[in-house]
Length: 180
Image 1 (cartoon, rainbow, N blue to C red):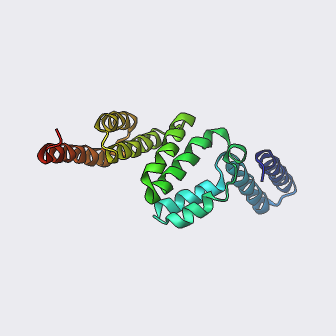
Image 2: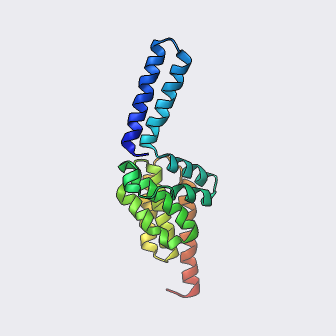
Image 3: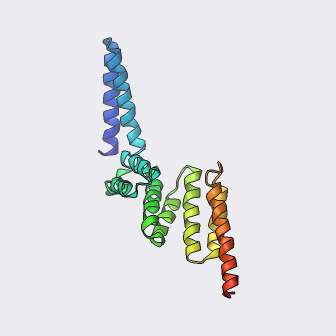
């Protein structure tokens, strides 16, 4: 359903709820307000993305990918504030299948912008992991420092610490193997 139609439908539900209150049908009026709120929320948060996030949290990548595939053209179907989040979700799913191809989605999500700091930190942490896999320590360190700065609520502190330890192990392996 196009975005502007969602607002019209929410307005119709709200108007119907007010009319139901006026005529004394309080229960139906409360239900009408609830429906208006649900439809209005889907204007700002696409239901396909919400369901895909749910399945990502449950670690069901196939279902998450299936729900994201229902968004055929994200630039027209989503509010511009959600474009970065869409690319982040695609990058997280792609990183399980082909980690090196996920880099473009993480970079695009950062360039389109996201409002939540922990999502920015997650994208930068993922980019640090990709840089480590390519043995680019300088880039990995840069992304790791940026992820630590962006993670203001320390939600990803354990993952950042673990990746730093892995970078240290990578250095010891390189020195031991005679690559330096």
